[in-house]
Length: 251
Figure 1 (spheres, rainbow, N blue to C red):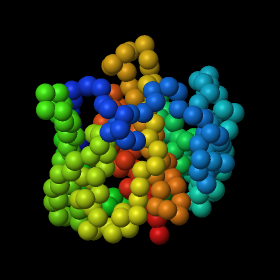
Figure 2: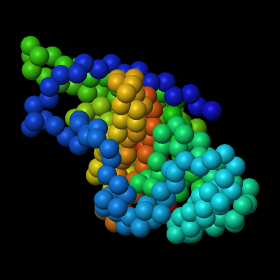
Figure 3: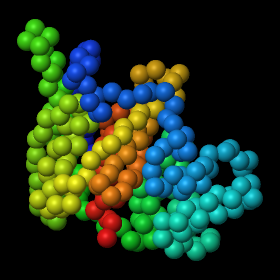
Figure 4: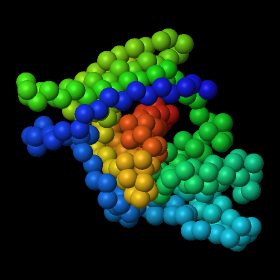
């Protein structure tokens, strides 16, 4: 297992409106429901609402969840047999991740990657060695700087890149794609078109977990991914990694 090492240096200060970008701010109010999300897979997302709370050993509830997973997988063109080891593994993984704060009804691409991993149809295109994100604010000289450095292993080759951006996530996105684009030119077409953040447990204040949804497009289709962490940068990284993985895994 590759260890993710995250170092975040951040000074929060007001950002002039003209300099704001998609990645510099996001609503922390509850994320729009699946029916409000624009995507070719909106119908799929509506079907993946599985977060009711069952009593322990509720067989009917587990069967309903299993059927939702099977229907979703079939819609994506993935064959899962009812109560097969793969289907049970997917269901167990979803339960575990939902307990961690994940939601998949608005993250079709993350769900598809999860199923492909269970079916043995997934191969990693890169491995993270480490990343570092920093934000510098100099009020006296009137400049902001967001910079990300990233180290990856791609086909056994170590790749190290540095990129600046209009916010920490934008900088991390730029560094990741700069590192990968010579290996995978199709990333040239990928754009992040939406970025949402939700505080999962608002009573914990700044120690709360965050859920990040990212919607991406290659000009022909759109897909959405999710990441959850106490660290908003790590949550963003998890969603961003899934977004890139999803595009690269498509035929």
